[in-house]
Image (cartoon, rainbow, N blue to C red):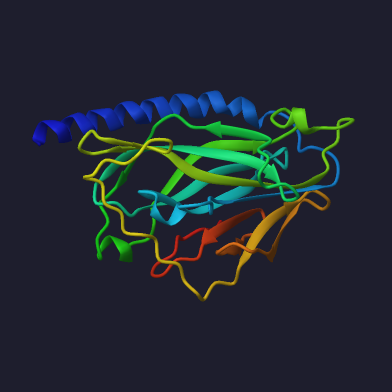
Length: 243
């Protein structure tokens, strides 16, 4: 077991190095301008089928204006491990769609494995604030969404959802979104709060500001003017998501 832990620590160090390399590579995504036109965009945790029983759940997603309003970036995600195994790394996935057609994915992406320490679920860990993972998933600029522009303008209401696609556990085992789970992996379903405002934040291009609006999903809006966070309504502690 000690050897596994040692290997796990070494692997995390490697992952952090890789993550830093990708952070540098992703800096080119910050070049460009906010698309012209009348459009909005919102970034939220994944609320699709089975999200409450994924071993690691995305509980909050923050987007913010960066580079003097040259882009709207999604780069902060809060995670909760609801499995019986400690986690040392995850991959995050995202997809972009319009509110008119949430089933048609316009753009999608995935991160490399990112090192993060998430203890196995227990009554004690359930009382702790969800850890934050910072990584530039997507910067909403003309360069990135070029395929969606019409006459160099963007129109419509867009949404981004973020989810975990792969998990590396401390014991060396893995969970992959498209594969069946091992028998040794146990999950305690995420408990949702019925005291949910059902609101989400959305960036509005005309005026370049965030607003909170109604949502049919179990989420709440935390608006900090130049940034905004959509948080899953869960029982117990909620992510400290602001600023």
